[in-house]
Amino acid sequence: MIRILLIYIVSAVIILLLDRKVIQSLPKINRWFTYIILIAGMFIFAYSLQVKHVVYGSVWLSRWLGPFVPF
Amino acid sequence: MQKITPRQIVLLGVTYVLNITMINLPSQIIMVAKQHAYMPYLIGGVIVLIMLFFLTRSSRRFPGQDLFQSMASRFPVIGRVIIMLYILFFFLILVRDIRIMTDFTNVILLPITPILIIGLCITATAIYIARGGVRTVLGITELYGPIMIFVIVAMPIIVFRDFNFRFMQPTLYVDWKGVAHGSWLSFSYVGQILVLPFIFSSKDYKFKYGLYSLLLSLGILVLLVLMTLLLLGVHISGRMMYPSYELVRQLRITDFLDRFDLFLVALWYPAVLLNLAISLYVVCYGLKTILSQVSGKMMAAPIGLFAYSCAFWFYQNSIQLFNFTRVWTLIGLLYILVLPLLIFAIHRPSKA
Image (cartoon, rainbow over all chains, first blue to last red; front, top):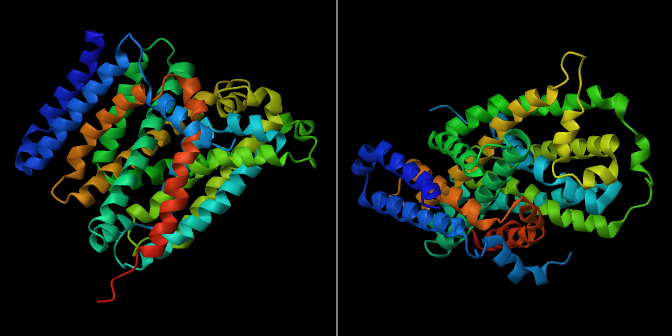
């Protein structure tokens, strides 16, 4: 799992390295947004990779919304 | 600055509706609507057209602005809430499309390559296109849109000799319940055309462009599903995951060009990547509208990577992805039916 998670981490690091100079020249909110989104994505990625029971978003939504679907 | 032409707007609408719908929806619609699987597209299209008219009218009340801009300026709070809801909608479309494309590539083209790597490559390409902005998106649309349309329109000429018109029987018996079910499934996919008034200002975008775009998309989708039915029949195509791909595989121009499907997939694949880029662009553009300090271009990569991780969390597998279409329409109703009516009712310039 850790090895697969590296795919995400390496991608995030590449994004941060490539955009480093531009992001530093923009207002701070851009930097914080980038960090928050990348970290949130990493947690979701790690959660979906775990071997134990995963609650998938669409399965959860289907359980709640399914009774309202007419067909 | 180069002007946005009507042709580009029409082609962008066609690209956004057509490319994913033609791969994900036909088998589900054929399964329920049987030999009249073309009808659900038309019924869904009529409702979407009315909603597009409402949104276009709302957009034209604010000359020179698109709907995102005008809502944020007219209603600083409610407008921003509605924009955030639409950002969520297009983000969910992006997540769904990344997963559809990843699964398709894994099943059909690259069965040995790990699915996570395929998804990452697809997302990275979409990010690079989206970072180019609307001009890049329109430029690529102008390149691939006409080719795709031409190829699909030319397909009946090649496969006509293999058509079996008995597959369309009983022609006069219509299972209306099945057609209604099919319309339910197709509604949210066809409804993606509503993206047009959100990203193009009322100066560039007119209702007739949306109308042409929708008619062209529906015409091509109907043509594709009819060809699938006439070539493969209801029972086989309804049980396939990707009947449109199977239809393309039947194309044989001459004895030496028997893998014509690879050529067509090579044309279609960039158009689908463009689809993902449009969704990503709309999400970033919407974010930039509600928070003016945020750079939409810089947000493309983090949001794209976030969508990538969500694509594997949101859907368990490709079967679940297909089954979710039923529920997806319920979510789509809010964005395609309820919110456009609300926007039409309240979104007017202030009298002061």
